[in-house]
Length: 394
View 1 (spheres, rainbow, N blue to C red):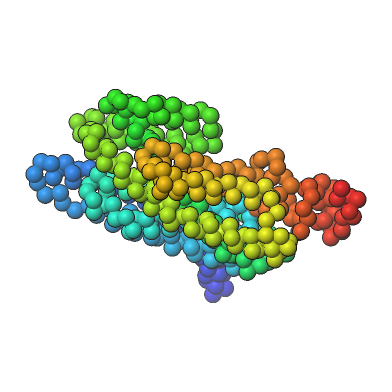
View 2: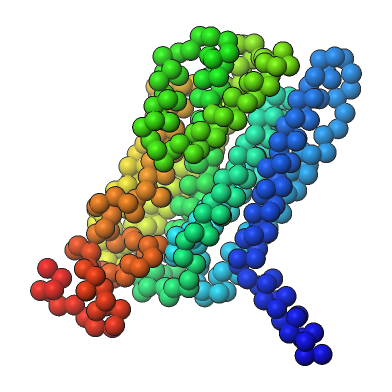
């Protein structure tokens, strides 16, 4: 009897552990990637049957992929909830917690965009694009979750400056906006990848396409993974179409580019209000914490630059009539700025004196201090509960 009770306790421990549900999410995402690939192939076969004058038949893998996506969202939501219980506060303090929230926003963004745009109703070609986006976003969530296993997952007490009602809405708005804007950036990569390979197989490379993709691959190392994966996947699609003699005409590609431009703008339209709201809530929070709406902190400046890039994009689109390559290039620049703010910020020299380094492991938060970061000796003093004099701070 005792052994049975112990086994039940162990099982319940697994079910209540955030890490267990994160692994479930990874399995569902992996299955969803396979399902999206098979669904894309099935949609292609259906289009071939229609061209031959026969019935297209059903594609059960499309619905299965959406079920797997919904399951992954449910599993990662349970993981976030269990993490909330484990740490007893909104789980967005450490970088591993923030990245899990980002994975949730990626999956939720794709689910929202899938049902908002309903690309599969616009034809088999667009159904394939939708399958590709589903697969890429689930791969992004899977890769992000795997990356969190290399980071510290130890519980950390919430510093006083984060013990505010602004903490959850501020972080939620920013992370969701990052998910949506990442999706918009991903569509930009698909757009430029399509341009690159259509030029390779059909000729007519534009000057921008000739240098843009190689420049991103060679000069922006941290963008190589996303750009390389998208470029290879789009290339594989073009190779398959070439083998089967089904390369689309340039008019069809132009139509696809216009729809990709519309999809990226729709994703941007959802993401930018949340980014704006996150900045405003951060300013109100700073006023309460430090009696200053804007302290020109390096993290604040980086987030402001990102917002300004998107403001330039919407002005160029609305007033300058930017569409296609020009608009996509600016939107891709915004996605790059999001990545710099979200992930590369901690490696920049000026970030060492930022007040926003709460996600860094081994860094003691400096409550209300506007000077340079504490030295290792000062941090050890703070950890012991001692205070630092003004002379030591200088």
